[in-house]
Length: 193
Length: 427
Image (cartoon, rainbow over all chains, first blue to last red; front, top):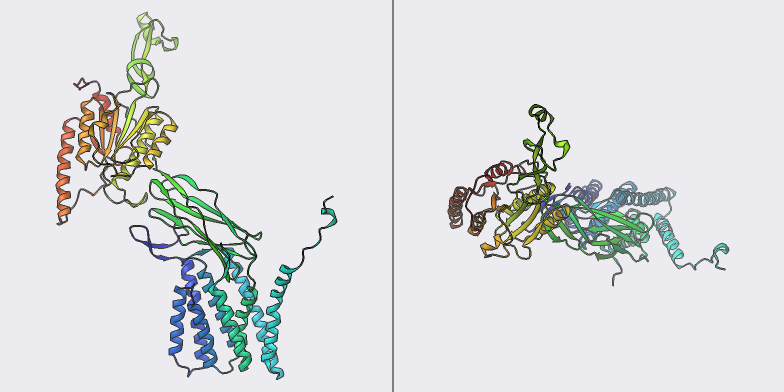
């Protein structure tokens, strides 16, 4: 019946638990960082290796203690190192790193929701995948706007920033308006009397 | 009071996403804006604190199961935000399998509720209080957390497993009124005794026509009466020898004794006999008076669950005889480590009670080859135990190692055969 590999002491205290969901989540936490760092060194072959090594180690630490500030340091360090090491990378590479950042964040947040190795149902994974796909699609649309704007010779940053603000603010405004909207009047059929 | 609190994940996307976005806009780096985009989108998507108040309930607070049986523990959570996720963790315990062992994440069912099922499988008999399960509720991006909410732990009664016993050996001294044992006196029953001349009160359907025709006088088929026996199961709980690793692993002496007692009780009750239970060496549980029926089986199993070995040492050996008359079949389950057990067996035998000692020392425990003082002491005790077992055998008390449901068949046959032999007992 057991789907986990457990090591317990004589009192039943768990010393080690290895589960398939736990291993997958750890891999999804570390691998995106490694992929992003590989992309960084592909674009900037002369970049130093030690910051990347530190970031890879931080990613492993984050996977072990997901409900901590280690993930923030890792993600922030990855983005900072990217901005320092590369100079105007292509949109495709930026999109890849954005996807890696999102996967790292979501895997880490998922791992922090329960004990290490907590098993999600299929519905949880499917909904999370759909949400990530939606976010990545919007990100791809933003990247497309950047590409087009660069071809037009316009300064892309302002356009991208504005687009992002509008796209990001819309659902928030919608939720906010729904929660603060006054209650609707009862329909005549349901009015007492 | 519980409330929704932001998680490290929310902090991460908000700080890194917005900082990267600002840095990209200021430095004129479109790649930074693209990298920041998904993080900012997630931060905005989960910006608002959920307005719901989740509540968690569990229907079962007490449960009775059999050893090795798998049961589902259920938690129902209501008041989830749209797309919310529930993390449910049931703490583990020694000799209790929990699946999934590290908790379960369940999604919102679309109506603001979720139901989590966690499988529990107790591996050893006994009564236990399980740890308090915990439930935490998250929004869809794990940005907000409510809880953890603590649920009451379940009280679980684990009954010893009862394997079917197909023994045909009779009880030696049936004395009651109804049952399946062959009595020593003639009467209405199923087992053939003899063919005798017809007498007043004989039933016509018992007439043996071939003999009647041959002799010219009516003869009937006489049978032995069917009666029940008084069986008492005695458990020596002074010591628990060996380490129990559950129903799938190695048994300790108490495991063997309790499971054997359950099997024997079920067997004799199924035959219509009166079965009682006595426990020595365990505080809080001493006996279940002899009775018949399925209710008595449940009473005995419940009593067996309460045994805590080694909690009451130094009981009077004469207590074993209280309320037991001659003709009772006493089945003593003991690892024969404590000399008091041997003493009790001798007292019972002297009182005319048929005693069968069932040796519950786990296999391999007699072999100790270490050089430590403890190993030496154990070897000496094993030698003494062998001498005591031989002495019991010389008194006519069979000592049978428990090796499953058929261990007693031959012994009971021998006892039934021996009952015709007159012997001197103290009354």
